[in-house]
Amino acid sequence: MGCFRRITDRLSVISFAARPFAARPGPSRVVAALGEALRRQVRSLMLPAVLFLFAAYFGWQVTQGSRGLHAYAERKREEKAALAELAAAKTDLAVWQRRVAALRGDHLDLDVLDERVRAMLNLSRPTDIIVPYGPGQKLF
Image (cartoon, rainbow, N blue to C red; front, side, top):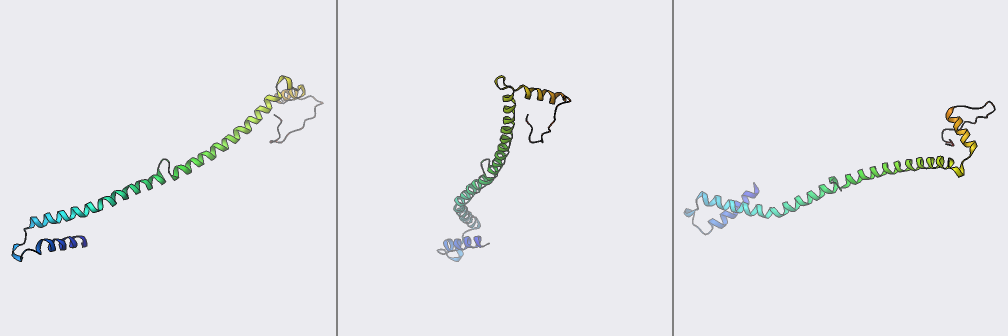
């Protein structure tokens, strides 16, 4: 209500100050003057509104966008999972490299091969001494 009061006060000062009481303009001129004053007010608010929308858009992109803070946190979680998977793969690789190295021709130990065959076939000689390994201490 205050905005329209200021506009009408301006109109009364501008349009009626130089005219006598009897020569007041008709309603169409008052409406045109009000429209022009309203148009000026809207134009003066246009630039701040556009700048606010730009700032709001970039603020949204900083937090929610594809390169924003939430996406950054998600990438960090994925990186941590990938590093854990890489560590598991490296330990698995070390186990397989040790197994392959034990079976090479220049490094082949017949006792180890005999032991491995007996373990896989679940056979043993009556004179064999069986030493069980713990779950984390397997040779192969």
